[in-house]
Image (cartoon, rainbow, N blue to C red; front, side, top):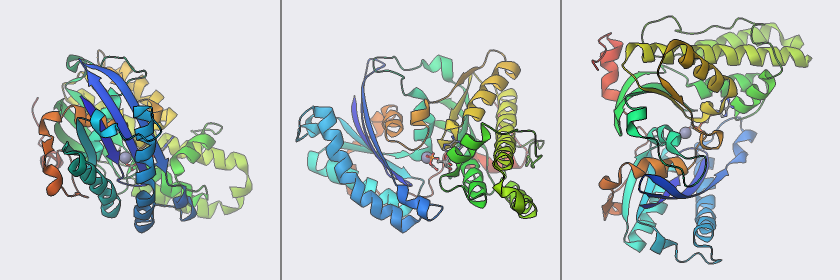
Length: 369
Ligand code: KG4
Ligand code: ZN
């Protein structure tokens, strides 16, 4: 199966080509164009993002065509593609549309099957992307059932996966996502956008136990998160310590303490889900999965507290938004790709995985395995 994928849900335009045969990845090419312009505004401006996608997608596809065909004009790309996959949601509607409309145009012109993929499902499937071409995909029996912690700029949730495409949402953030907690506190500290990598770099030289920031909902038995209170606590803390912001060590210690607080909550809730549910593996996914402390802490906690459970994390290059993950998710949904589906395919900015189950969990009635 040879899949061409496009991703444009937020502020990364991305295209990828994936070939899977007999359970192994034979080829993977991917390109990402990140929109640096948003650092000027301290966050993603939707209209600007959409315009940037419009400018970026055609040259990105031209670049991918060259890479895949090995020819300067890349015009044989269409002949090498079996299906086209595109992120249909969730995300910013105007950004999503650039990707879906580009994919629809290709599907129409080349008469290809097309499938819309959920962006969060894409993040989940970044765990299936190989370190090197030629590797086999993980065996289903080693993964399912799985507890998945999804941590991105827009989402923080714990999913329970019984098999491919079978999601139950155990809990989600009630306000800010973990990535937003990093981005918004980084902004308060004057560190620019995106904040996660900046805080993480500073934290590496700071003391995580120096300041005791709140760990919201850490002890509560449900799987929901809330990070807005942490942001407010940091705002007041910085206001009361303004004169110390010139002190580099102070800033490093705040970053390290903040990173530790966020990671502690994420790890505690994920391990609790792993204990409560029958699980074969714990998977990590989303942009915040690039965070070194989170990767180490979750791996250690799973090893120590969930005996026999396998821990998997995506390679760092596939944590933040990319199209390789969209192609991989599509690889497990090829039967749903339809010829002619380009006619009425539309973006869905609010598309959520397994949301129907959440009300039940919030009422304290957990599902049965
Ligand atoms: O998944 P993603 O690329 O976009 C969304 O779907 O939202 O995630 C972006 C988020 C941003 O909030 C960014 O600050 C965060 O991932 N992030 C990190 C790190 N790298 C990216 N957060 C903490 N530590 C990192 N190393
Ligand atoms: Zn994402």
